[in-house]
Length: 326
Image (cartoon, rainbow, N blue to C red; front, side, top):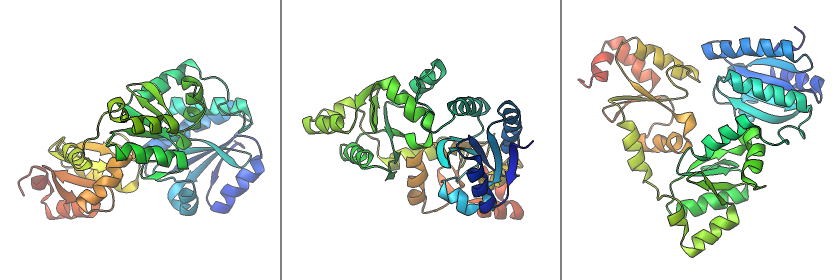
């Protein structure tokens, strides 16, 4: 099928983008070890039959690290959508319905300018409603709190932290459908946007006014110290694995390998997807003095990463460590 191809190098990837011109190009950053990538490849093959004017590209993420790094691809599956050589949208994870919706919308739009410019539909409104109610206080911003990607987002993050406000965040640069749709949903044309209890508070100027009047703490819940939050998450289960993805869908090779080892013991354990919580992802590195993931904890104490778990398996000690006997 001419419009479904596999790129094996950076040069080939860039050549396909150039050749596609303004047509939609869907690039699947995948890995052969991840079963969820196979599922998404099958979905992409069906979409390629329906959208002959679009180009669908399979790209092994670990084989082209320079491309993965450029587009901040740190897990698989990840889909990037291009038109006119520019990235116009993104999808992280194995979500066939969401992939289908994005392809249909962008293929019809035909250009980056048209993508997402129409009014939000019913499905999108439901998704936005869930997002704004995902936590008592949610900040829709450019970037993430540790690395804001615009000055206004940086200012709001600083104000919330200064006033000890507990908040979750959503990077609107990672999802163009949300970025465009939320403007219509909230009737607020710019970012950042702060929500409290599902209701729009406002942007940077409103947050500044609330901070100056002393009302910001009353509008949003006060933060639990990060160390207390990390301790609570670590002790959520006797055996806790912090990883990229979850038991059903690991999103990096190291996480996949450690799941296989733990599953082989037949013992119960819980997981936490650090890709869904940037505060935990960054904070746990400092808390544990362990710079990489996955990280395994037993009864609140760090065991280690993949290499340590492999060593425990080889020595025959893993099961007793997981039971808290060693």
